[in-house]
Each structure stands twice: as C-alpha cells, then as structure tokens.
Image 1 (cartoon, helix red, strand yellow):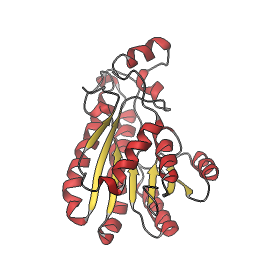
Image 2 (cartoon, helix red, strand yellow):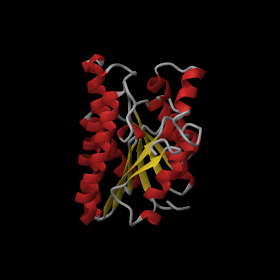
Image 3 (tube, one colour):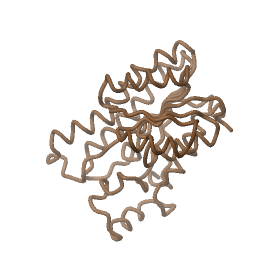
Length: 248
C-alpha cells in the first residue's frame, strides 16, 4: 500500500499505459480520477474498479475542459497529491514534410499544450500545500527517435525538457516532477507507430528492444508507482527509460 491515502489524476486513464497506472495506483491504496476523452470508457473502468476510482471526461488540449477536470478532482478528493500527464497521440509514420498541419496541431496540443494546461490548473493547489508529484509519460522517441515519426518524436523531447525545467522551478515548493519513457507497447497507439500491424513489422520493432518484448501497461504502472511514492522522495527531474534496453 505504497500510495495509501494519496489522490491522483491520470489523464488518458481509460486505456493503454494510463489504465495500467490507474490499476496499480488503486491496488496500492490511492484514490484515482480516470480522466479521458472517452468518457464512457472511463466510466466503465471506474465502475469495474470500485469506490476508489471516479471518471471524468476531459479534452486535455482544451483549457476549460482541463480546469473542469481539476475542479472536479478537488471537489471529489479535497486535495490532489499526484498528477499523471499520460494522454498522448501520434501521427502515422510519414515523411516529416508530408505530415498535415491538422495532424501536427493535434500532436502539439495533446502531447505538449496539455502539460501547460494541467500545470496551470493544478500547480497553484500543489504550491499551496507545499507538496505534490507530477509525472509526465514521455517516450523513448524523445531520446532515440525513429524515422517518419518526426513531430511525435519532437513533442516527446519537449515533454522531457519540460519535465526537467518544471522540476527545477517547483522543487522549492516541495513538488517533484519526473517522466517515464516507455518503448512502444501493447496499447491503442501501437498500430499508429508501426503504420500497420503485421507479424513482420512487429518483429522489426522487437528486434530493436534487447529484452525482446513490448512495454506492457503493468510496466508503466510499476514505474509510475515508484516515482510517485514517498520511496522516491529524493528523485526529481529524471526521465526514466522503461524500455527493455531500447535506448542503450
């Protein structure tokens, strides 16, 4: 029960890595808001988990929607200990000059602007309590980028830099900020990264991961639990690779 008594928001919490984080946090004693653009999926998951999970529909790229999420969490929980910026998207594998402006804007808004919006909505609350943890789910793409995912790679590199500068600025207020860098995993985004899901393309991806498997939601849940627990009270500003050796 490493998170007993803690409260958390997990954006993009109704599927993929976010769902793995939610499940782990609840198992470790936290109360969690499952915040997702798919409100029905969030509601279904919350019902399955039980009283320690609540659902919230949110568009993390929209300021009013993010503020409504923050207000709902504080109303439900009374305070917030942990914010997980997990929601993310990618464009399809495409030559960098051929990515549409609409696709670029979606990646920018969901992967980058969302971190600004959630910080604006919730950092003042954390400052007022002189404590809090923010965890950004970045990617190995921000460290060791793959071709044809240029603007997704760049958005995750931005997220890693944002993590480090947030950590430096917020440390005097007792707020820790870290990131995790998953490798491609068994999530709804996998097909987007690969372009198409075939045994041959999967084998090609797996050949770049020394441990020989994709990331699983449980892997992210375990890493996130540690970084957000009091066991990691001296850790801030890190972008921890959870990647089976992909970035070596």
